[in-house]
Amino acid sequence: MSSPALLGIIKLKMRVRINGAERELPEPITILQLLQARGIDPRMVVVEYNYEILPRERYAEVYLKEGDNLEIVQMTAGG
Image 1 (cartoon, rainbow, N blue to C red):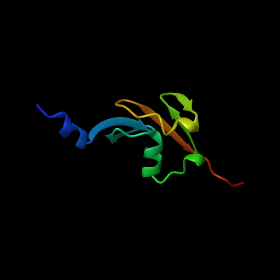
Image 2: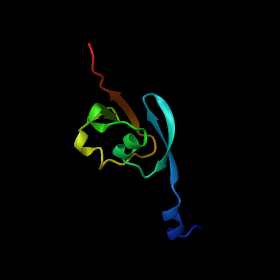
Image 3: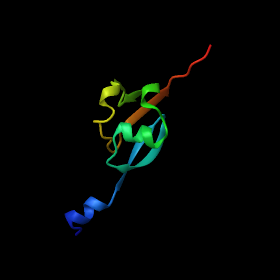
């Protein structure tokens, strides 16, 4: 059996679906951390979290968990 101290060091993996593709991510991770790790400016996207639009101010407080579904839509400028 693993000690709790050891478990605090090990990053567990979880599977989530991002834009229709299954991905394996370290756990725990917030939506904001995920966006930052992918080089995405959180001000330039809309995130649908488990089929609901998530307010931008909640990106830092919502931790992803096994089986979550995300759609990340990037806004583009142009005409």
